[in-house]
Image 1 (cartoon, rainbow, N blue to C red):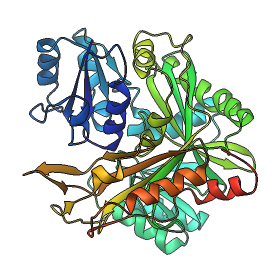
Image 2: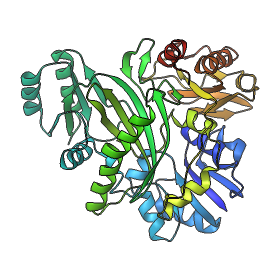
Image 3: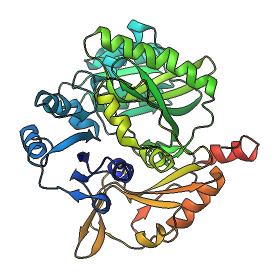
Amino acid sequence: MNILLIGSGGREHALAYAIAKSPLCNRLFTAPGNPGTAAFGENRPDLDVADHAAVRAFCSGERIGLVVVGPEAPLVAGLVDDLQAAGIRAFGPTKAAAQLEGSKGFTKDLCAAYGIPTAAFARFRALEPALAYLAEHGAPIVVKADGLAAGKGVVVAETRDQAESAVRALFEEPGAEIVIEECLFGEEASFFALCDGTRAVPVGTAQDHKRVFDGDRGPNTGGMGAYSPATILTPALEREVMETIIAPTLDGMRARGMPFTGILYAGLMLTADGPKLIEYNTRFGDPEAQVLMPRLASDLVPALLAACEGDVSGIGLEFDERRAALTVVMAAAGYPGTVMRGSEIRGVEAAGASDEVVVFQAGTRAEGGRLLADGGRVLAVTALGESMMEAQARAYAAIARIDWPEGFCRRDIGRRAVAREVAGGGI
C-alpha cells in the first residue's frame, strides 16, 4: 500500500526508517518531511498538512492506504477525524481523544474521576487565585500551561518566586489556563502502549532527558536525548502501569464517548508510592521514537493497521532485547530560546557510516548540496550496543565526526542507565 506520514521532525525520520522496511509499504510519502526522510520515500513539502481538504485530496489522488500522523498539533486539530470521515484510514487519536495531550487540565480531571495515580493539582483561569494557591502550598511546585507547548510549557519551580514568575508569564497570554501540581520525587520513565479504543498492548519503554544542560540543569526542552529500554521499569512495574494507569484511562475515555486509538505515551514518575502519571502524549515521542524504532524487530505497519481496525489483541511488537539504543540530540546554540538558522552541518554521512549508528534529522534543510540547520533540535545521533555503555560510547564517537561548530549537545545522556549497568543491572 501507499503510506502518507505527516510531520517533519526526528520522530518522523525514525518512523520513516521503520515504515519503509515493511513489505506492506509500496510507496512512502512524508509531508512536509525533511532531508532525512527523503532517503526513504518522497517528501511533499508542497502539501499543507493544516489544510485537511488538501490532505484528503492528496490521499485520494495517490491512493493512500494509511496515513500516520506523527506530531501532536495535527492530532489536536482533528486531522484524523477529517480523514476518517472521508473513508481514509488514519493512525492516531481523534480530536476529542487527543485532549489527553492537548489539555493538561482535561487529563488531570480524568485522573481524578477514574482514580489514576497522579500528582495533586488545581486548575486556574485567572492570576490571583493561582498566586493565592502558591502562597498556600509553597515550593517546590510544578506550573504547567494547559495546552500544547512543544515540551517547554512546564516549570519545576524550586522557590515560590520562581513559581510566581512562571504563573505571571503564562497568564500574559490571552485566555491562558494553567495547572499547578505537587512536585513528585523519583525517577522519570516513558511507557508506550498501542491502543485500539478498548484494549492496549505495551510497545516499549524509554527514558528522556528534558533539561538542556548536563546534570539535568537549565530549562526544560523538547528532549536532549533518550535511551531504551528503561530497565528501571521492571516487568512488575510495567504490569502495574498497565493496570492502574493505561487501562483506566482507556475505560474513562470510552465512557466519555471518545475512545482512544493510537499510541498512548505515559510520562511517569516512579515514586516511593508506585508509578504516577506526570502527563500523556498521544503519539510516539521525540526523541523517544529515535531509540524505539532502531530496536524494533518486527514490522511496524501491521501494528498500526490493527489499531486503526480496532483490534490489537493479536499484536505483539517485538524489540531487540539484546541491544540497547541511546540517542543524543544536537541542538542549535541558544536552544530552547532563540536560535540562529542557516549554519552548515558537515560529517553526517561519516557519523552514520556504521550499521550501529543512525543520524536522524529534525531541524534541517538541504540547500545547494549542503545540509543546513533550520531549527532548535537539529539532529538525533542514535547508536545501538550490546550494553548501554557501548551504545553511549558509539553515539558520542559518531558525534565527534560531525563538524558543526554552531551546535551543542549534552555529554551525560544515559548516565543513570550506565551507572546501573556498571553496578550489575545489565540492559
